[in-house]
Structures are given as structure tokens and as C-alpha cells.
Amino acid sequence: MVPKKPHALLLWMLVCSGGSTEAIEPISTSIAVGMAAALTGFLATYPNIFYYFNECCRPEWISLNKTGLKVDLDRKLFGQHIASRIILKAVSGFMSNDNPKKPLVLSLHGWTGTGKNFVSQLIADNVYKEGMDSSFVHIFTSELHFPHASQLETYKSQLQQWIKGNVTNCAHSMFIFDEMDKMHPGLIDSIKPYLDYYDKLDGVSYRKAIFIFLSNAGGESITQTALDFWKAGRDREEIELRDLETLLSLAVFNNKKSGLWHTSLIDRNLVDFFVPFLPLEYRHVVQCAKAEMIVRGHQPDPSVADQVARDVVYFPKTERVFSVKGCKTIESKLDYYL
Image (cartoon, rainbow, N blue to C red; front, side):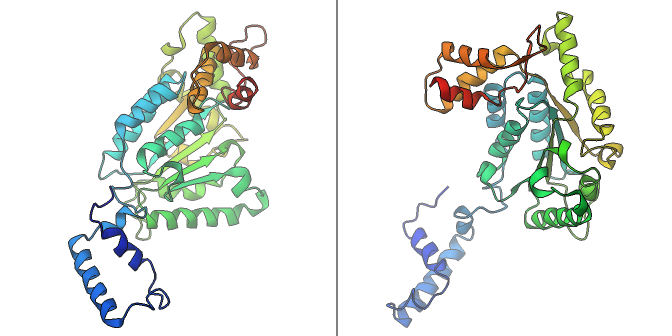
């Protein structure tokens, strides 16, 4: 909300001039003193005005839009009834708690293109006014930020400092770790103390932060369960979290290629939810294509969406039930038809 007082912006510009002598050269000393006095009085009347101009770690900039999150999950995320339900309850419950005992830790698992990154974006969009562009949302990608196994100890130290520094700056920080399946085993354990049930560590409380791990690890177990339901003639919406959670956590914990291999985060039950993302079927790919048309400002064309979905590769080869890459290639394929 921008203040309606017409002189607010002028005063903000005066303050942001940084006191440069060149900036006030034409103004006499008496006028400058008078303006300074007026500014002081204005700030006394409107002490929070500058929080509206620059992003700050305050409710004006960080506050959950629960209705918005629910609508986004219902209308924009396809084929993920389990993930939608868990994400909404976990995030809304955490954000409504003024005194959480520990940070919220979510581990999202599934094949490429099933919506893990997209859900992270939806959470950010409905918690932070600036969404993914917020200075309080931080993304780490394994191959970019931690490429060399020989520098593991250096990465551990850097990661600890990055998280400590950012949480010190804003308790409601969000950290997204992409490509956990490519992360060096042992690295993520370096931040284990920050995810635990501590009031403070070295004077810093991490209990209001959100940590999200994204990984393809466990995708085989999720896919096999979905395929078993399909072969048994059961609807995918019948799959429940209890059918997957234990199987998923064990698969991830014992996967030597996963950044969560034998991690203390799982051993100490610090991951609040293992969220499975089911493989997408033909109908979900059609929905993705239509949604992308809307994003581009086009009226959804069922025939085009159908053609795009038909061009996608499915597995198993004979049954062609699930999309190999989910909806990941929809944008590029749609370019060909529009």
C-alpha cells in the first residue's frame, strides 16, 4: 500500500539522495534545515513509511495468502492430489504458528516435469510479495553451487555461513535446494543443526525459516506404485500418502547417488514431509498445454493441446501410461504449433 500523502514520495527522494552536497547545492542552508525539520516531523507521524518502498522482513512483504495458494494448487498443478493437500496444510499450518518449534522442512520427490519446482514457485508467490524475486528466497543448485567433490569441506562452511547470514537478516527466509539427487552425500548434513529443535544457535533462531529439497530420487518407487494401481484398475486418486511415504523415505535414505543418502536429517526425523509427485498421464499433459496457452494470452485450443500431448514420449512402451518428462517439454513443443 503506497501512502496517499502527496509529499511522501518527495521526502523519500530527499532521504535517498544520500546527503550528496551536489544534490542540494541550489538549496540554501536555511531551506535545507527547514526541510530536515519537516522530514523529522513527517517520520514521527509515519514511522513505517519507508517499509512500503523497499522489501523488508515485515508482514507487509511476507505473509501467507492461504486462499491464493489453494487456488493456485487447484488450478495450476495437475495430477498431484497428494502433493497439493500436503503442501497446503504444511505451509498454512507453519505460517499460522507464531512460535514454531523448528523450521518447516519439505522434501519433494518425483520424476522430471511433475511439478516440484513449480510448487516451490507457488509457495514463494503466496508467501512473499515479490515471489521468487524476493531477496528472502534463496535457491541452491547442486551442479552450479557445489560442483566439485574435492571442495566438500569448503562448501559445508560456505553453506553454513550463507544460511546463518540470511536467517540473521530475515527469520522468515526460504531456502530451496534443487537437484538433491546430484548433491555430494554429506553436504546437506552440515546444516542439520539449523533444522533441529533448537531455540537459538549462536544467538540466531532458525525456527521460522522454510527449507525445501527437490529431488528425482525415489521417483522409481513412486512410479512403480502408480503403475501398480493402474494395472489393478484402481484410480490414481486412490493413492494416499501412507502408500508412499515410508517407501519413499527409505528409498531416498538408501540411495547412494542421493544427497540425502544416510543423512542425519532423515535419521533424526527432521524432514517434516516427504512429498511424492506422481508421474503424469496423457490427460495431465493436455491440461499443461492448455494452461501454457493461457499464460501466453491465447484461448486454449483443445486440438492443439491434444496434438502436443500426442507428441510426448510415454512409458511403459507398450501401455504408454506415463509421460517420460512430465510437462517439462510442453513450452518448447507448443512453440511449434502456435
